[in-house]
Length: 290
Ligand SMILES: Nc1ncnc2c1ncn2[C@@H]1O[C@H](COP(=O)(O)OP(=O)(O)OP(=O)(O)O)[C@@H](O)[C@H]1O
Image (cartoon, rainbow, N blue to C red; front, side, top):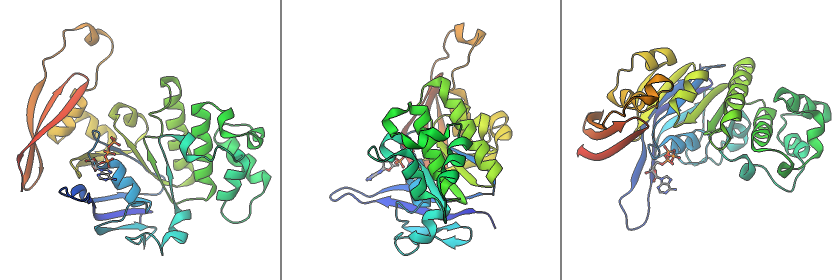
């Protein structure tokens, strides 16, 4: 049994007076203990909706999310006290997810599974590269990267089985990004936590993920070991994503390739037109809609 098993998950948003949006259109995915799976895809493809459904923040319209074999209830309420500790989310903006008026140590203490005093808080802070003295300070007294380390320490405090990290480093400056992403993935691996890392940045995920799942219009169109997906992408959309990553060095001085258009099959009854060129991928109109 894997700590995280998602079976045919569907998430829809209903806005009065508008057609409903099927943000997650039947996704199945597993993450093993100590495994890092990168979920990649362009803005609006449904990554956050899936991540929020996994932690119980979005109700599922159908399908199941199992944390250590226990289903998260679609309404999220009755299963929450159990699920809350076993699955944690790290958000893009640590400033908004931390309480600005509460000392860092207290916030970590609140999240600790079972009994844990100052020594456990210090251990957690040290595990994310911060001194024990950080416990006495407030979130605004830290840099963005340090705040994200605090958010990671707080997520680890409940000894979760699963962590969903939604763009956890994209708000950080480039020099800190890799450090914090590396810290998160190394800690998860060392502690046997299943980590689902959501990002639009495939090249960043390449460095830390064991497997990559590519999401497109609410579906996972390709999943496989990172090296295989990177070096031998099977799905045209994955190829478009990789092709859009700007290359450094000699290639950077070469004239830009003109954008090209490709048809990408999303499901049995759906295909889209994608425009891709160096540095961008744009999904265009539905060609065949059900
Ligand atoms: N609360 C909501 N109400 C209505 N529609 C929503 C809501 N949240 C998301 N959506 C829509 O669902 C789709 C998927 O959004 P989602 O935020 O999950 O994508 P994403 O891949 O995480 O994008 P990003 O990388 O920009 O965060 C989009 O079409 C979005 O507009």
